[in-house]
Amino acid sequence: MSEATDLSRRRLLQYLGLTAVATAVVPEWLFAADEQGSQERSGQSEPDIEVGITAQPAESPILPGRPTKVWKFSGELVKGPPGTVEDIPDSYLGPILRLRQGQKVRIRFHNKLPEPCVIHQHGLHVPEKADGHPRHQIGSGQTSVYEFTVLDRAGTYWFHPHTHHRTAEQAYYGLSGLILVTDAEEQSLDLPRDEHDIPLVIQDRSFDDHNQLRYIGHMHDRFRGFLGDRVLVNGKPDFVLPVATRVYRLRILNGSNSRIYKLAWNDGSPLTVIGTDGGLLESPEVRNYLMLAPGERVDLWADLRGRKLGDEITLRSAAFSGVMPMMGMGGGMMGMGRGMRGGMMGGMGAALPHGAEFSILTARIVREERDQRVLPRRLSQIQRYRPQDAANAQKPKSIHLSMRGMSPRLNGRSFEMTRVAEEEIIPLNTMQLLEFVNRDHRAHGMMMAHPMHIHGQQFQVLKREMAPGFERHYSSVSQGFVDNGWKDTVLVMPGEKVTILKRFDHFTGLYLYHCHNLEHEDLDMMRNFLVQA
Ligand code: C2O
Ligand code: CU
Ligand code: CU
Image (cartoon, rainbow, N blue to C red; front, side, top):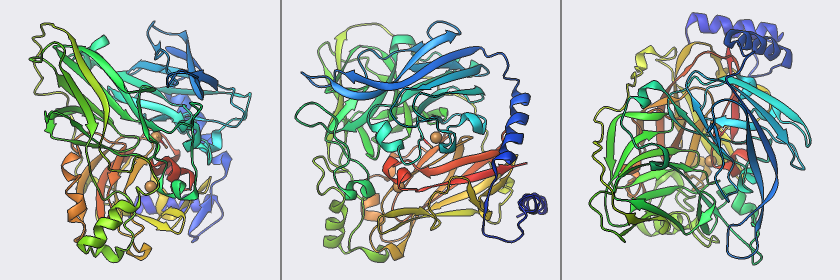
């Protein structure tokens, strides 16, 4: 820790009348002052865009027959260019918000649910007051306002609730929407646009005999994470995409609570990736399959030229193993037979186990078209972070992922609304070296994959390191990570240590980091960073 860092940390502790304690309760007034400061800096008085978003009970036609009771975000454009708010017809999904880098945005959120709620803009770097921390949740019937400037690059972001202990269930019943940001860099490229730029939200759900959503049955589901047996795309089962013989841009969001997908085309065609969580890659990358964990996004260049009228190509989730608790595999030791049983344990009781093979959507060629478009070799410019530029270059902050009984934790701690530990205090305008370590050998086989997400700025993945003994399962997923672009969520497999570089600029305050397995989030596998000037 540098001297400056140490000083500012000491100053904070002095503020709090504390000197050498492990954790500190951060009083609200400290943030109030900061918020005012950052609002003045971003000059939020006159927004370019004003949107009303209402969360309320609704009904949605999902399966044939009776409609399904859902919770839905609906949007209304109050000020801004037409097309800023776009509904997905007949879907429980919330609206698509189309924003441009640099726009000042005001969202007026009306909570017409019978319980508290708060909206989080996943992936966007916004002032803490607009970030949807659970301490800012509002009660039933109340309204709150989020104001921010779009600082982020072009990319696929999304919004969903972040309500204390209720995020998973609220998202499950339908509350989420997309935020598509564009910028000058993206506009200068000849990428497919408009109806050829297709957002696809993948979610698994489970229904009862009356077409109603069924959520968690056992405590076991909570600890493992909810797994549904129907895979929906944009709120529809058996999704068919009518397409022409041309190039499409497919922006895929894994909006599931806990299911991880291994995306692959059924005919073995490779997938061409042009973007990840935080927007376009520097150059396209080709993969035979892609791992997509909850919260992650991937942007594809899908070239359907040369296909015949009537052809179908199916995007499926291919088989994989090793993401669920490895019972009887203590210490990473892996007898073949035991490993297999272990790998299956997490799927037991689920109608569609984690890692099972199933189809997600079918693209059907219904029209012939000419399309001369060429895949750009250079998509965007990404400034590579260098580990030596981190304020803590010699001393990475380690975040150990663990499972104790029914309690998944971060560095042995559970979420505390306004508390931070000493190592969770981060000086403003610094780059930090962070590592997620999924090697809790004392948990004796309860290790599982955790998609780790950090609020605030996008980060870069520096490296993945695997402990010996996990290779067999790991090899079924390891070629499916695209770590070269900007990320806000990264899957950390059992036995893995993933090192990232992240900057903490622009805003002070509490920013969450947590597992994006939403059941884990609600089981308090979440903590605060305090970014402090
Ligand atoms: Cu998408 Cu804190 O989450
Ligand atoms: Cu987020
Ligand atoms: Cu987790």
